[in-house]
Length: 319
Ligand code: DGY
Image (tube, rainbow, N blue to C red; front, top):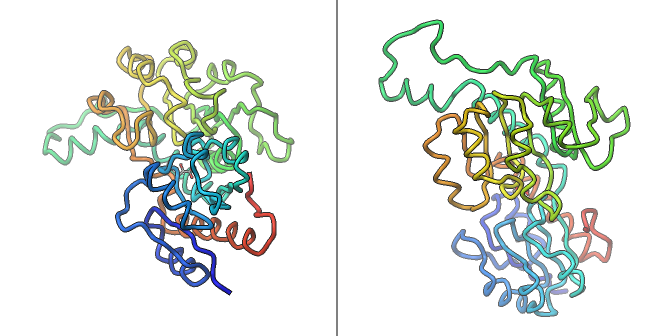
């Protein structure tokens, strides 16, 4: 029997591509660049399934123009804000994501951003690297201590909980806000705050770990940033859309926030050039899940979902 045809627009890990080629007839896009709307629409007439990333946008317009041949979009991402799920569902297309497998890598990056912003790593690196390190003083490079501080986590899904576990290693007092309170055994001693505003007030560090939805988009407004304690630090390894970037810049320039650690931006790729002049803003180019182990696991999870679908079962991560 002929193998199903799948389109892979980005250069996934070698192990993922090897397994995909074993089980499917793979069309791999030559250049490792985001699949355009036009490419997505054209490929939908040649493929039964796709493994896109968050760089391929399945808007309502694209969904409406997909060829009926395409049956499944097995995303290589946990976030699905690049997909209009209702429009895809209306076309009868199964959509899956890759939850859980990137929790540790993403939480690890959030810890890195928190530590780097708190201990002024960008500035320190620049001072040593440029030969500007010419003295030492007890007042030199003094930062904010992470150990024992209060960490507020917005969104206690898989990444939020992985971050809470890692924060215990720093004896942090973990507080959280989530749509629903977790069962006590899943809280790991973290303190629940029913409202985001209450959480902000007790967060020396605030980490955003929730998806971008119509409800959360733009949620970190200037009023909300002002609620965070003076000298606190914002970390975002979730989605840029959660933060009003102008308001964040104002809070940094006014000295209300001591720093920020950002892995994602409203505009990607590219980021926000206005942040670049502030060494207390540590930036990464959307690399939360970028470890070899996790990229293999994401690819395999997407393939598991395709396998189940083409075997006639409901994929584990069907949305
Ligand atoms: C995700 O999986 O959503 C990450 O942001 C990488 O795409």
